[in-house]
Picture (cartoon, rainbow, N blue to C red):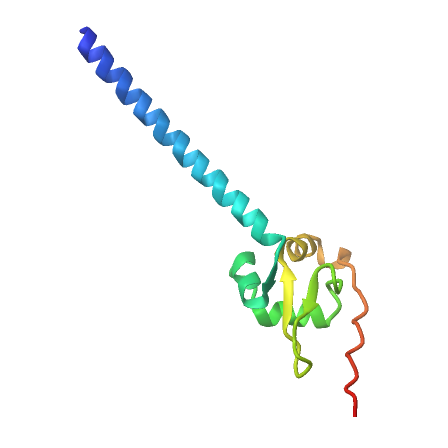
Length: 117
């Protein structure tokens, strides 16, 4: 192999290695973004999308009403008092959903705010 051919081969190997490195960096950035989003308050519809196809906003809402999640830590109610409008932290929900059903804790629901007459 000539010096020119060796140089070209080395350049091609370097370019391929750089491509793999760029793809790995992009994947790490996506993972970091996902982890960051999972620790922020999001709407139930967004949470269902982040958790996967087995989850719906309705199922998560039903699980909140059943006491599966802790108020203030796992979810909050952002409504104006007419009907519940929940925001959740996906990382907290994921942690509970990963447990076997019989090992999942239950929490009492907070009392709804009383309307003044």
